[in-house]
Length: 510
Image 1: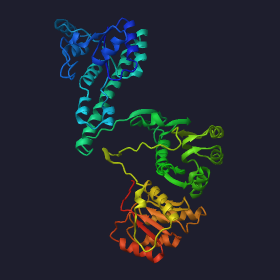
Image 2: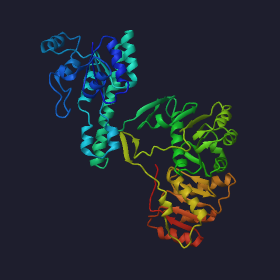
Image 3: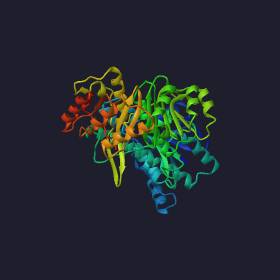
Image 4: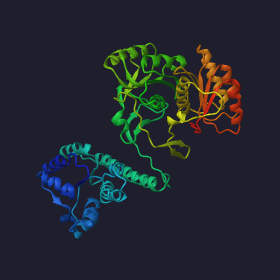
């Protein structure tokens, strides 16, 4: 048996090579891998002894050779192939271990295009694909985590077709992901990120029990190891729907940076929010907005959950709590809630990946865009339109209302008072209906909206929403502006004594 080892990531390669040698395997290697193996006492053959040709062009050509690829690709069970290999002096290569040049690490470290080009692997993917294609006869190893599995299979005689098929699939995933990353990078550098093809590659973190419904399969995939590095399943397993609700709740709560915040989400929509450094008080205030919808909801805490907060949360049924972290005493409190699921980021605060792009499936394909980012400066730099100016307290509330509205399904109207959301209308076909539904809900919860501020993620097309807000006692409004009837809206705000601000930025979420 002969093995070809050529890896950029040298983790575990010496131990793997020694394990292969113990099994009587002859080892061929290239460049840096050869040097490492030799220095560590592994009996190894340098690649040019096989290719009968020296590495050339600054190492650009090492393994692109018929003695290498013929050794990998010829069919061992085909008499004609075996005869031709013998005639050409091609010896079989039965195991190929390759991982590719560190393209991702290079583009994260430098913008030097010449260096980036030199870190595009050519021979590596070619060997991987050759070995994967001939998996019937050849083992292809692309993941250092598989070294022990491969050795065990060789030792125990379980190197079955099924085992090699699993490695083959992993190998094609490896090269596909690598090529996708290069293509996306080149399109990002030269075509503004929108080339003829867009590749979305994620690595599976875990399967969910099912998708949105029991008859659907589901799984979580990640970009850049975000969930593997940050997301901790403290208690229970996340379902497909849990993950989408967590996403919505975390985005809102984490949008306030290092400030203490609690957001409650039900079926993807916020039904409670409050900003307060006392997280227990923030939770109590968030619950006031819609405690009925909060039942069985998802709570995101931008901070560490204390025993006091855990005791308060235990007073009702919640399905999920996601937080920066949990105090040990809080976890003890939650032990009594068998159906409650707990997740954390192992941090003082919630963590966002801040993905640069966003996409959504539509029938037959997907739409792809730059991610929508709600900047803190949008409220700070908002232009006063009417005659009145908001107070400092109102400006703080306007920031809360504006961020929640921007991260909630359109059409959306949000009312905030004293750091807490007191009413929200979302996902409506009419902005007037959104405003009215929000006020109706607030009334049913016994909440006084008078003195609140209001935000909309898009402009008000008519003054009727301003008139409705005034009748509810709203004192300040923030919206993007941009309607042909902005003058009517400004006039209505002045008539009602409402401070009005335009941000100039629309944040539709569909």
